[in-house]
Image (cartoon, rainbow, N blue to C red; front, side):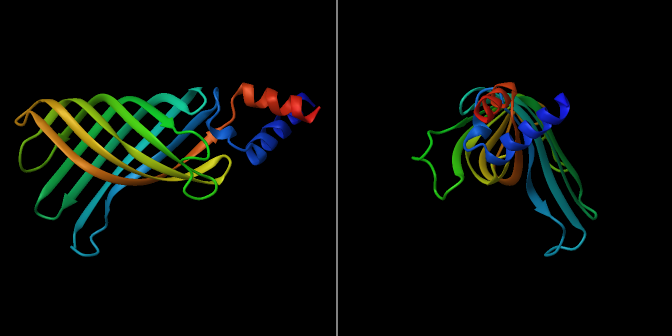
Length: 192
């Protein structure tokens, strides 16, 4: 019975929690995709970068966590480019109301720092300290699922045949916002 009650409370929190997705104690998990190409305009070309991430809201609107990135670009007779990264993530959502473009949407800023590398098949490779920062926008399809677009400047400073590598990337993705214990307790109090 206790498990059934907890399951019902979690469902109510997920389905009816207005602004609950970015409250202290909640968890954000998801991924972004960028640099997507399947050779439609150039035969035998494929490229994709995936960036899974997870973060915990340490206060309302501020999430800290980690992210991983892996990129692959390959073309027939041209070799393979590989990029990677593992690091810490910080994301801040602005105040409610002022930064809504449409209902159920929010602007945010995201920054990362960690170990990264860019290793092209031709040209200079760089491996070392990676960092990124930029603005993003999330549209909450439901209170617990957000579709997002993110424009980030990515840089790597370090070792290799090139001391610095950088790019500006546009990524799309989704995040799932899971309620923390505090949100569950609040919903339980509201239901009594």
